[in-house]
Image 1: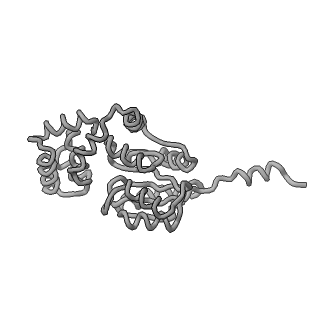
Image 2: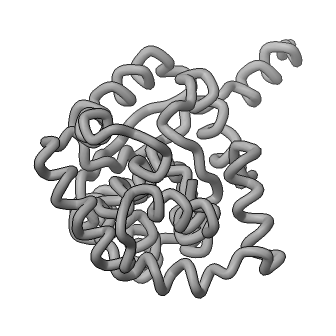
Image 3: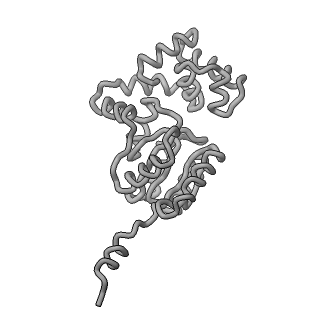
Length: 231
């Protein structure tokens, strides 16, 4: 005679979510992969990418359930990875969850418009990240309250996304990262530590940002970014 309780236990057993990690910082990828190895019953890493080309290759070849996707990558950005994967025939069974140091409106809106199902920042705890992966794998959306507000504002047209995009198109991805940190009040040394670059490189980026946006100093930059809800 069959045991119905045993049958139910087998049929409802949790299958680990197959994940591809996309980030250009090797140490960060290693750290996330290490956290995931501690939970083999919930998640398994099946591939990694560090730029647009390698990320598209990893996603298309492994067909994971979830892609943890950095927004800024060598060779393009996270949105480009999503659109290229779609062009390569990837179906909706693979969902994209943005995992980025950035919490700026234009980054959130851009990657969601490209097709991501959620957006969390790298300050998220390992436990919350695992929960976010499960949620996105189930085809639900995941955002922090602040980031969800950006998306709602964008779709309600309360943010002039066209004007934001036009201004920010003048900046490179790295210049955008530096701009946001400087606008938040970070010192050059703190920006250098956060982005793993030299202080001299930070100074060069700040100079380029001010020139491209036609601003005179970091105080004007902070006001510019605040007015556009970028910080």
